[in-house]
Image (cartoon, rainbow over all chains, first blue to last red; front, side, top):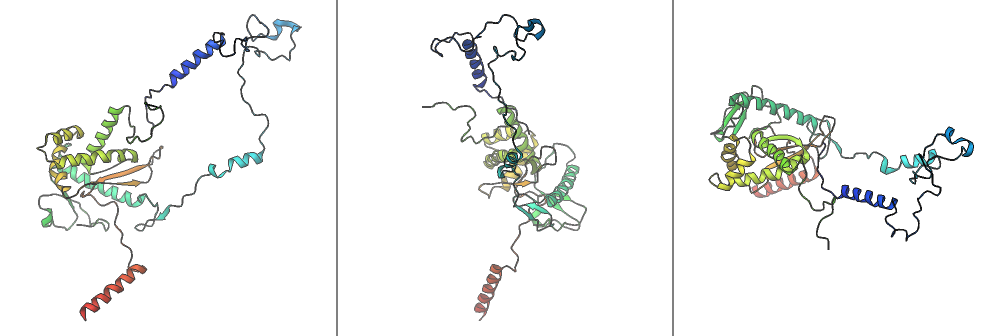
Length: 187
Length: 163
């Protein structure tokens, strides 16, 4: 269930602030940082023109082993130096925190015999109750006659061959045309 | 001394965030409370049921004050969007829960939803509803040691009383 949240956080302002600081550092307008030295990321050799120059135009003057765009880009990206061996990989992949936890809270439902988690209702029994509830609600709707006519009295559900007792005096009677199920105890 | 909270720390916050905005959260919970009062048993994601439970119980506490009370009527008018349920609340639910001091709802967890999200679902119901019960209370079998000892004690007491 995705939750859309509008966060008023200072994080975008932080990003904008960082961008401004970086811009000023690049332009050398923040001498306090390096104590007045030349900014170390200025080009050692002033190169006019585009950085990424195709080899053919420059001619044989430049050695082909020189990597292009070294002088302008200071951003070094991290990359693995060595291949991780399968032993190291196994240690990481099979660490106990990465394995799926085994559930020890699965039991047998005493009513139907299906499996259930201890703190959760049995799926089969709940489906039975849900179906019966749906049929009872259909009967209630038929009796009401309209969509928004909730009765202002209590309701009682009676099955075949049952009579309303004196406790069900002012209540609305809902008849279900079947035998009373064993799990629905009348009281 | 820090006088304002930093973002992304929510220590001690009790109310969950739902929907698009705080008003939308209240509308969502209001719909759920209306559905609960109408159907007396609903199935919904666990977090929503948990959040809604407090509001539903407070609404019933307000309804117990009686429908002559101005505040109670205003609360019921806000929280129940379908106005025929206000009659049901004051005439059916308030008398039903008059003897009980609190805890008018029961919330139980269900197997996760069948859809793609496998959401944790709960069923929340008002106690004393006419629908079939969700959980049958199980008594321990008579064959357990404790129950056999208690049975023996009762028989001894009866024999002593008869003699």
